[in-house]
Image (cartoon, rainbow, N blue to C red; front, side, top):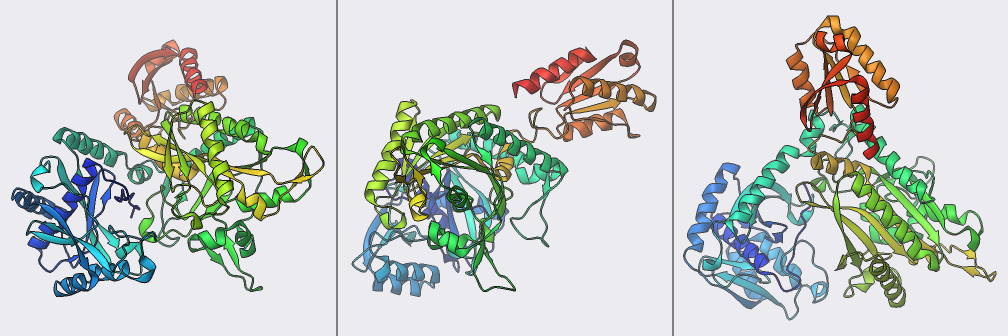
Amino acid sequence: MKKEKSTQLLQEPTELEKIRHSFAHLLAAAVKKLYPEVQLGIGPVIENGFYYDFGNLQVADEDLVRIEDEMRKIAKRNLAFSKEMWPAEKALEHFKKENQPFKIELVEDLTKPVALEGQSFRGGTVPPVANNEVGMVYTGDAFLDLCRGGHVENTSELPLDAFKLIRIAGAYWRGDENRPMLTRVYGVAFETKEELDTYLKQLEEAEKRDHKKLGKELGLFTFSELIGPGLPLYKPKGTFILKQLKEYSGSLRKKMGYQEVHTPQINKAELFKVSGHYDKYKDSMFRVTSNYTEEEYYLKPMNCPQHTQIFASEMRSYKEMPVRLADFANLYRDEKPGELGGLTRLRAFSQDDGHCFCREDQIEEEFTKILNAIAEAMKTYQLNYSIRLSLRDEAKKEQYLGDDKLWENAQNILTKILAHMSIDFTPMQGEAAFYGPKMDLIAKDSLGRGWQLSTIQLDFSMPKRFGLEYIDEKGNKATPVMIHSALIGSAERFLGVLIEHFAGAFPLWLAPEQVWVIPIGEKFNSYGQTVADDLVDRIPSLRIIVREENETLGKKIRSGQLQKIPYLIVVGEKEQSVRMVSARSFKDGDLGSFPIQDFADRLQKELLGL
């Protein structure tokens, strides 16, 4: 199950967020009316809509229309939303009477001493409050819920033609696979019917482009229960594309002066204790045991701690700086099974990872190089993007390494770099890495969906924690700055993004099979092979296949279209007699006849365009 990006109402909600949150309450009210024994979970606003989790509920997709109808009936009663603060005892008494165990748990958590104002609260829609009180929201006389608020004033304000319940899924209570599995009902809501219709069309197109579906149809990857969730097996075609992605990132890294290294998959726990990952990240790491030692080891979830040890392996001079290291080794993260989803969230993956150790006066130049490389990569992959400046959450400083002065300096440096490069950006408090601020690239695919891909992180903390040093121009020991960066992030995750972005029809340079030569009959197989050999002589790297199977021409062409082969060449008596080919492009359709040289020129031009 995909981890939902909640737009929890931590600040003053927008009007659209109020609409969506109000629909979440209507959903719960309607389900409670239709299924009186249901147990209520939580119902936050998420991107494009809302959901609500229910226990003791058995419904199917065909029940959604009935629930929608009930929601509209309730809304048409013109019910006011109102909020009261209740003592915890009163709220507990109410929910015990209603047999609502999940609400009881929430009230108890909210009123524990550890859940006072300012502390984080996982999984709920209600923030921690003090004074032993919780917020209770009325939807007229139809529904009463535990909630922080953020609604329209009256159900008459809701655009009843601009919402829809779209699907049902399973969800563990509070995201914990050891807790009960609840029924999650998803809905979408907008301010106008036109916006809803546009979104539903986009959703339909997204389902067609689902990388899990296309990955199977195109023979790119598979999963096995014997191997485990989040651990994909890449078939030859998928492996080829992954290799191309990594090689292209490697070429961009090389242009910037990065040298590739390789580091072990397992490491002593001590490494991660020094880096800070042990305390901040241990729950997401796989522990490894040995038959011969009791030392604690972990599969590595990232490369940065290992790279510090390569830097530390010899004394460096300021003249050698920057030291740039790239690493494409596999990484492992112990993601919860319910949060895994195709290739977009995995337990085993690689990154086009880089770490630069530099002097402070070299930071802007290094960031500029990486930003330019990212821009080149996004142009190649035909993706638009924006930059998010991810900053520390000033209300939760204890969750980050380093003091205020360090963070203020680091965040100011990144802001100035973006200003100097005239790059528009969106600041986002609370999204920084625990060791430093970062620039995150948010790419938009062909459906307008945002994906966080590249990242550049400025780190003053880790070099100090590992005692890294170089000799400066005055002969004194100095601590380097560390820049973490990825150009596309995880190659495996990016493959999933690209499958959906291109709808499986990869650009020529990335397609595992670029050209099929299809003889219209067996007697033209020889000419088909001649054409293939001629094209390979002109373009040695061309990936071309002669389809000599004893099948009909129509079947071979349909197969090529289903496999989204960029070019199909049909050869028969006419083409053989004039030494030409008839070509068809997956993207542009029938192209007519070409001399072999002219067709090769077309391919070469497209390949060089990348």
